[in-house]
Length: 393
Image 1 (cartoon, one colour):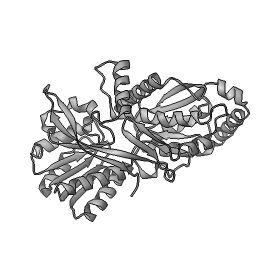
Image 2: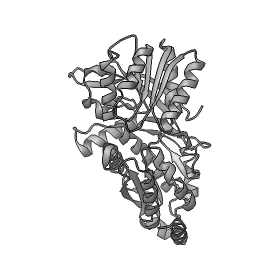
Image 3: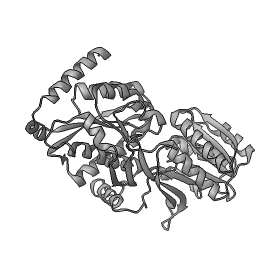
Image 4: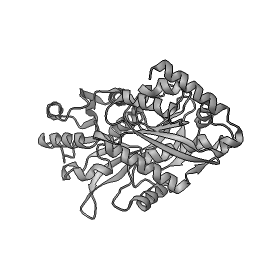
């Protein structure tokens, strides 16, 4: 479908929706599209998204604002931003969704942004940390974190604990660049020294050359940002080969590299490593307990509550608020975005506030440390919590 034909078709759909009476709007199901990675290298993320969403609807009902919520899942299938844009078009024109939630890698919402803007369809980004995401469309709300939040907290945490000589290595794409910029800015402002930095190809699995440079620089802090799962395991193996793991004089920190869902992939060499994330299984709060109880009740004890499940749960809070606020009226995308601005709630990750100006989220950040639990298995314990971290400096 050409973009011109897409826009014309979308306009027809929107006009038809606008013509619905208030009574019809209240009775008709409302469709919510979910774009995610349900196959390919990031299929675990899609699985956890679905678990978080289904746990949420099981807890809070599949009906809100007088309307049944019908979820329409679509698989992006790997690092494919053009596919994310095409699927967004199909969801709006063919499936007639009113809201699109999900997304994982930053290029996905960036590619879909023109579609959301043209059709005035709210997009609720669960994950995707590039600064430019909400700048790309006034119809995007981000409930996930930015890398500025992570970078600033990591820098302040490191300096506070005396780790003042750092090496930074990030994956070479927008979120990695943002983390590098944010960490360097805050770290050097607080008196830290950057010994070296690397931007590594996003799809590489060979981190040995980069870790060799880190080892030669002899930092007291190594800060990394790479995809979770197999890439993280390869990075840890490279660190171990260079004798950098298990040393008290070197702090190693990442972001979601040691997330609970993938801890079983690692050996004891990760003990003592740190990870910064907006979610912790051990995090306090009634909503986190609801989330964990719902995951275990619906999917069994073998399924651990996850970060990706938590961001989906928290994203659904915003989607439901958009629908609830328009009860008895035809759904309007612009109204939905305005309703979300300034919306505050307790989520699975702690306190969340959608910032009215940026449409990003102010969030709590958890610093977690890998330890050996009483059962002999690896676990992450909360070492620090920083509350109310704004999305941008």
